[in-house]
Structures are given as structure tokens and as C-alpha cells.
Length: 140
Image 1: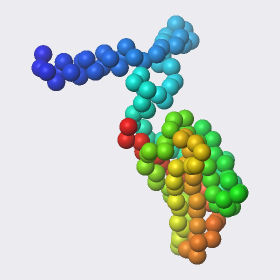
Image 2: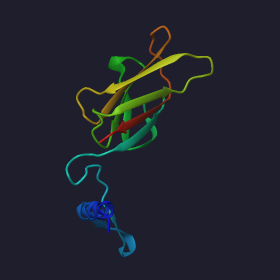
Image 3: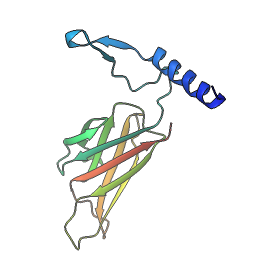
């Protein structure tokens, strides 16, 4: 075997050996859900959330909850994920009507490694609640 094939095989074997398995229905086994890797890091991930204007999470991948944060303004939202995201990259897009200009910002949420703070403003700086889509890319 070539060296790169041996390295790939060794890596695959190490990952398989480190993956916990839990029993599933009908005697089949499946990996246990856990966002943490065997080496206690979290690895690469692409997470997503769609949040309604009122704050509830509509759907997501890795998103566990969302809420409006009125103390920070009527269009301030906290989105929580199933893993730390404070060192990740964020992209947020408000769902606005054609011709409207809105600015959405996303930043790590103070007080939790798993949270993102999103704020939406109009061109005059006023906060306005809108449905938005948040993508989170974690490089590893």
C-alpha cells in the first residue's frame, strides 16, 4: 500500500474506534449524537438557523433555541447552538421586501460559548424585527 492509503486507513480506523455507539431499534447500532470529537475538540461544522421576527426558532441545523432579547432592542435575538460557536464565522441575512435596505449583524453572545447575538436595523439605524437566516461556519 502507498503511504497516503495507509494514513487514510489509520485515520479512518482511529475515528471508528473513538465513535461511541448506542443500541438502536431492531438490533442495529448507530453513533451516539455528540457534537464533541473524541479528542475533546469540536471540529469543522456548518450550522444554520431560521428565526422568526418574534424570536422563536423556525428550523435549523445544530440550532437548539432562539429568543428575542428586548433589553437590547426589539430586533435583537439570541440564537443558541449545540456546540461552542464563539470562534466561528457568522453570516446573517434578514428576509426583507424588495427595495428595503436592512443591515443585520451577528456576533458572539456574551455569557455563553454556544450563542450568537443578531441585530437587524434599517438604513437609519432603527431596530426592526424581521425573520432572518443565520449561517455559522466553524473551521475546527
